[in-house]
Image (tube, rainbow, N blue to C red):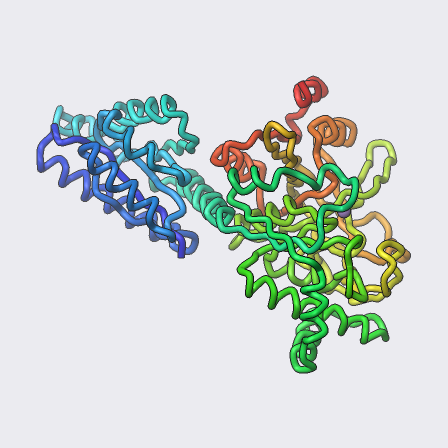
Length: 478
Ligand code: MN
């Protein structure tokens, strides 16, 4: 279980009694937060910062603890912020500044100077806020009484984003083959990706998978087939095509496990030794939280793994998708998103069918794939692009809708959605912003989650939604 450390601030000016009370109140708060957030994160109290030396020791502990994904700080009393400089300079994990109090209401009848000295977050948190601004440290501020539901839910959101950032720093992508020839937006600076997000992008030939697939035992393939038939409806007589995909999944699983990867890419331009493009194999792995990028898209492979981690424990589906084609009926414009095969099974609203169809691209045998209709409801579409000087995240609010009519001749899983605020502004904004045709769609995450991730990783963010206007469009490329 991941954890956050809780570091309170004070100083030694107020005497031993006051500091004892500070520690006791902080324990009450931490106990309460653990009770409320225990299903998401564990919170552990560290010694109150009374001096610069304590702050440095606390932050060293934060940085050396692999289970720790972030820090919550709060100034119970006034805590002169020069004491925080050296400690904060060590901190390279997400930071939440909780602007709260031990007491909810003021005891008007009894308040005296002792009470005011003990309970002065309004004073101390401003001093502390200044030093965070002065040092330019990305952080979140959550203001409000710690038992209030809106405060708890913001801390929960921070914990989930911090876990995703901690996970991001350990992401290793196995790229089988390179970026698709001539495609621009899927490419990017792999070195900068590792410096900024921690992503290790490692190249292997797809022959590694072909070899492992050929070596898969009957028992392993049978067991994978049992998994498929227990989850999906077999809608083909071509069992051998499904067994071929089962071999691929056995091979991918072995390979990524052995090499400690959590995401992978492939490309139809390099299927040396493979009979089919991986279809079900990729779809089923994505549904297990494994990141995937087709056409060698390492960014979406890594980013989808990170966002699936962020969505862990929430209702809804999260995964890779590609923009394809539109219905431009005036006032009812919709987008049909899909891919040639690899739509994550997590989007299925109905039990997916395993079908085998011809694939005109790649020049290989007909691949087995999962075909299904998608979940509906409010969601977001998110992508990450490399602009040379920096990365940019683009996040659009969308509404996933039921397909208006069946598409019996389209042999792939489909997702349809409506753009916000409308088709004209929503899609033009995406184009102006340089948004990719590969993205992550989620009905579990919100724009606020992505915005927090962007702030805490120092990534430029462009959002598109009901509040986007015609005038906003020009800002995106200036
Ligand atoms: Mn594609």
